[in-house]
Length: 133
Image (cartoon, one colour):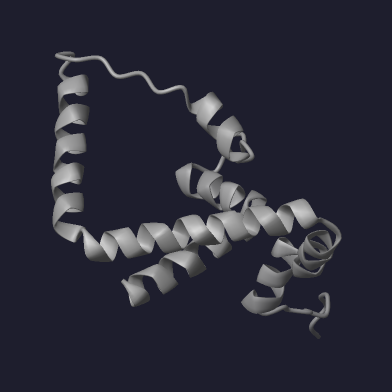
């Protein structure tokens, strides 16, 4: 009666594991001392960021308001601000991801998966810094 393929469905967790390729990532980390040092640096930067956010939150709110006002003034062509993003990405060793067809969210997801270890180490450091600060 029913003719069709046998459905072999995977859960979302298995699909997530396949896309991230965690086994390949752990092998890369074990084989490269430079990556371990970079992970430690991003962990330290995350810790410092979290600590400073917790300690100086009033000043950070003021700084964010100041930056927002600079952006608004730039949009109104009252001042002109230019940032060399290529140099910043080169300085921090961030892999550039080409814009995906799916939109902004898929582009961010591609960037996250390309820099997975650095993002996770920064977030762990940030959480520890917020807790300690």
